[in-house]
Structure formats: structure tokens, C-alpha cells
Image (cartoon, rainbow, N blue to C red; front, top):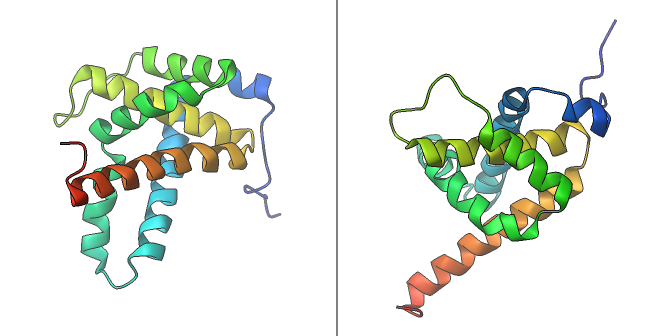
Length: 149
């Protein structure tokens, strides 16, 4: 028997009852795969190592924390609630390369991504990630042109 893991979704109520750290667990993977796909589509000439280094700059706690600051204004009440559940969840460890505040905000971000993924709201994931990438592109353009300094 083959299980169809790609089509199995949870209802919003089922997802809300999940441990936020479990949602963050899947959300971390969801965000990383989107970042990796974006990077490989835009930088197919780069080596796997260079792609990996670029991916790290997006998926580390510091970056996710800064993304969340941009996204907060775009969240609806339900998304904001899920983000806060993840942010306020007590994680047993904090990586040595992140401070506690950044790590908690990043966990909230991952929880939100996991929640949207597990309920099948892929369109909303794309919308939020587009906001992140567009903001990143705008910042690169400002740095390149020296505008805003």
C-alpha cells in the first residue's frame, strides 16, 4: 500500500492543536526547499557548495527573524496567532550562532510556514515568500545604487 503523503492535509482545527514546535519542524523544511529551488533556478551556474552557502544566508535564525519583521504587517489574525504560538514555544536548545530572541522569532516564522503547509495553503506560502524575496531584492538594489545611504 502506498500512502499519498503529498495529498494528506490537516484541517485548520487539527493543525491548530499540533505542537507549534512540530509545525516549526516541517516549516523549516518547507522554507528551505523553497529557498533552494529559488536559488537553483536563478543561479544554475553556481556550484552546489556556493548554492549551499547562499541558502544558509536565508535559512539561519537571524535572517528568518528579519523576514518576520517584514511579514508581520501582512499577516491575518489566524497567521499572527500561529506565529506567536511558535515564537512563544519553549525550545529545549538555542543554537550557538543565534540569540534567544532571534531564535524564538525564527521558530515563530517556521511554525507559520509549517501551519500553512500542513493545511495546504501553498498559495499563501508563496505570497509571503514573495514579500520576503522582493524585500531582499529591493535592499540589494539600494545597496548597488547607493540609494538610501
